[in-house]
Length: 376
Image (cartoon, rainbow, N blue to C red; front, side, top):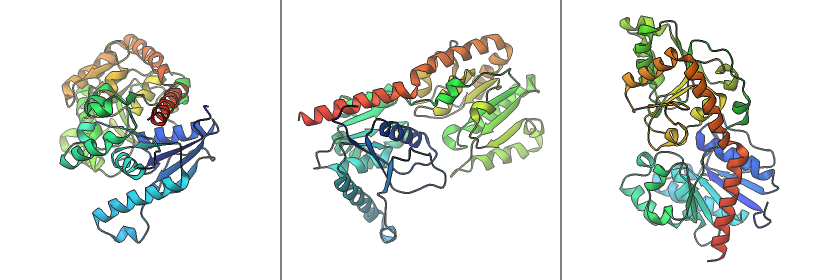
């Protein structure tokens, strides 16, 4: 590691079980292996969080109990001021931030410190960075970041040229355990992994599966994940309780969370992602790394399209099109040899996303931004 980089601060709301949190925790653990001092400044702690290397220091940058009693605008200022205090105390060489509010907050808190800030856009900006207030923040705050990491070209193109010119595109890393997983003899199991929320559109998958069952009643649909803050699981359960849904109800299984997906999914006939929008879908990447035949909606902001070459290593279908999704599932059922060939191609494609390759891209970009900032 370049001696120029001795200390990194990562700012994110929490290390709860989300895609951005996963990447932040992996980077934190990987940088300390290079003898870099890593500080993770979070706003709060979730009940279930990603683990990080014991050498990573976690500091609280969120509200105090007294500040929690204040109004919304006062809380926003307190969060920024608290983070600034942490930045001034820690004096990192660079700050990495993840997700909308943390990105805005990090840039504002670091103003005048001469510490470079690299923000990271982790989901569809057309959903998360729109509206009058955010348009203002994008122009007058986000554009002042020293660098930005996007996951796709489509996400990058949403923002001003000011930010685009100093940005880069880096994909998410995939856990090695999925690349090392051995494909088992396939069963008649179709799998989905993700939060049961509107973004993921699990209802679309259930309705497409219903069409598949008309021809292939022996298949089962296994949904891995929880509903968290949304009520889509209850909505699905209500749908399956209907008198005319008895046949499909027996074939749909809510599996909850699992820490052993590389074992539980190894024998699946296929993996399906029915999302309305995504950033860089980790679950899809993990399924491809395992060698599963995969199907995804061709959703913004292009994360699925980044990995899938249709009919080569997976299938893309239009967003919210249950008929097209059902036809894609039936294609794999009717062409098992082709499905397995596409799965093998998917596994080969995901070798691009090993932790080491992704880490080196982050490392090189951070050093580039630091060098440019020092030359200003």
